[in-house]
Image (cartoon, rainbow over all chains, first blue to last red; front, side):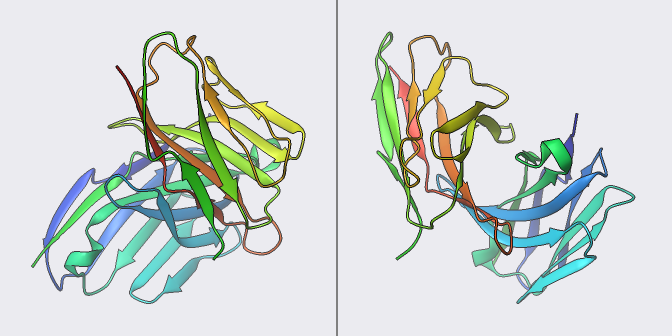
Length: 114
Length: 113
């Protein structure tokens, strides 16, 4: 059974800092990995998707990496801003018969202080 | 404006009542999903549908039912058999043809009175 862990559970940083959020998964047989952002009381917004054959994806100040063999992904946020404050969720999609399913971590609550 | 809509945003249910949560998408996606989110827990899959007129149970389907009569619509009914229905419910759809990205609606918060 796939399990996804996100560390740390909460992170508070001053504005302008670069930061890294971590995601680990127990079964390396994944199809892809997706990072989401969730604001309080809202739905999830997709940030980046990395296919299992890729090593990283970039969008603006965000960079996500994937090391499938070690079961790890990181989300790097450059020059953080107060508007980046949210919960960040990592999810992996299984391969083969588990392809229908995304398994989520519990998220990292990020607070960027002005 | 393409996307996923969920209604209502807030829903209150009395003990013993069935309630139905609406989910509509105009993204032309075949696959749709229902998740439940509780504080301190990750999202858990309730039901999913990969094509019209077909749906499958997820990890926590007991006390819930769905239908998929149209590609655009995937309503979720929370029945009186669901013992702890108070939660945030999220609907999603999946784009298969290029990026395989999963998109989410804004959610419905259900509270049992």
